[in-house]
Image (cartoon, rainbow, N blue to C red):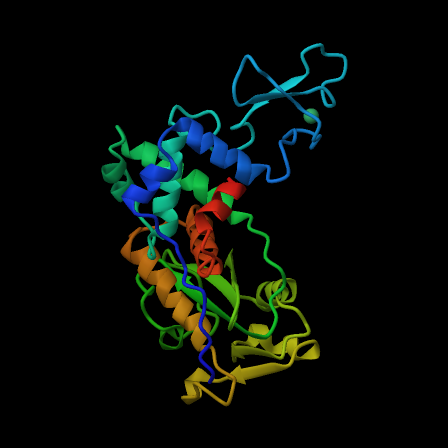
Length: 306
Ligand SMILES: [Zn+2]
């Protein structure tokens, strides 16, 4: 194995760096503007790039294209259409929460955020974190290539920390508060996750076809029957954990299993109980963080999506 020097990720700003970068609201607004509209301000409603800056109202623009007949046109602000809109929290608080959320490896609980930020209510911290997660969750990911591993796991309920082989019951009936998550991971690239309602063939098979490129050099899964039809389009290698197999040449699912342990340590360790309703948001947070693990500008990437 050749050891290539990877660029060192600069994920975390110190408090001092954060203060220097974002001393006030205007600094945050300027940063948001640059991230949101790297090619100049566009109307958030119709996409028109020929908008007029309102000199009487800083950080506000006007679009006459999507408000025909109106003399004033459609007016929007730096926050219009972002998750930071319609809140009474300064943008600086939003940036702070976003930064904390992205740089905590195992996530950060609403309670920790609440204490750290000194918000009046826990609910504020909870709400802000969820809005940011929602913004990260529609992260478009290209179909995965190279060597891809696919696996499912269960989160929540009393079986969360057992390996799925030891739970018996093949497809692992989703009772007792458990939720199933399926993931596909490219060994040197991205992960794609989805919370699923069941682990039948239709669900597993269609997830793989939607997320994994058919030109992969190898698709590795365990011997769950839900994956049995994939060999028609994919070079499919199967590991049979029940028979004590874990690695056959390049065929193994160690990368995705490593990811599951990060996810579980985070979801179970930091968030304790995650309901089925909100699990997709937490899953999106972990996916975004993993896929931007080498991105020195993970914060900027997140702000651009907010
Ligand atoms: Zn417009």
